[in-house]
Picture 1 (cartoon, helix red, strand yellow):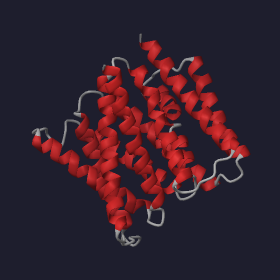
Picture 2: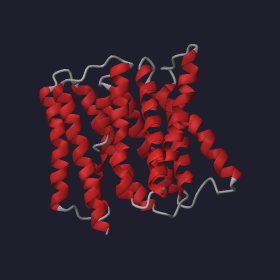
Picture 3: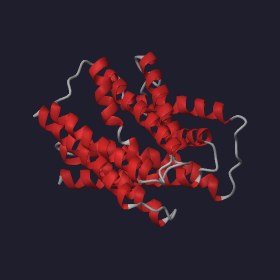
Picture 4: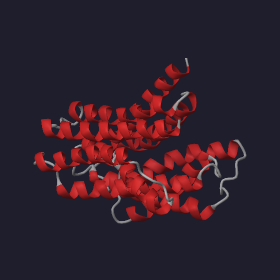
Amino acid sequence: MDIKKALKFMLISTLSFACMNSIVKHLTHMSAYQIVFFRSITTLIFTLTFLLKHKIPVLGNNKKILILRGVVGVTSMTFFFMSTKYLPIGTAVSLRYMAPIFAAIFAIFFLKEKVKPMQWFFFAMAFSGVVILKGFDLNLDSYGLLLIFISAIFSGLVYVVLSKIGKTEHPVVVVNYFMAISVIVGATLSIGRWVNPIGIEWFMLLGLGVFGYFGQVYMTKAFQTASSTSQIAPLKYLETIFTLLFGVFVFAEVYTFWSLLGIGLIIVGLILNAQFKERLKT
């Protein structure tokens, strides 16, 4: 029964994130900073309300590392949004999922963790997908590729910072810092670049935060409900598939055989690594 509930929660989560990604793609005429602002302020209302309602200290315990998590997170998010102007949305999402590779490299230096030879093999498989994407898909924009790689690198740093935070902070406190810093950064950098939303665009901008919030909440519920992380973790990559389908049917994006092969190798390599890591814990 638990696994069925976990699967349902993860399905809702990945579909929510895919909807958020699609809205971002639709709003590419706006600056990434403005999208960061709206993506964050709606979620901030949810998180702040939750913390106040449950009387959880908003400022947390370790303010410096919480601020660091927010800065690293907003950097990754901003570069991801910037990349969607130049890359098909499904490609951007799949490349952002390269973050675990960078996280493993950072963990070697900052957390003194060891990476098994088999993990390097899985990472090589995933990276070969990137090589295929760039080498054989002539439509892939080099500047967009640079932006999404920077996003993935900072996303990998997020994993390391979260490991440092551990269980010393309430999860919603961590997200609240992330959103608060993102609102400040997004609002500040939007000065001089602001585009006034028209009609339905207001609802779409607010929808960014709503979909992002529910995506995060239901992902957390999925991991809490499942009896084993390995049962549910690979389903995170459904976000890529849903987003790719939105790209095809909503934005008329075209994915070549090589781009699909590259995306497939990235997803398979990272899923195998996640399952291997889980087996090491048992």
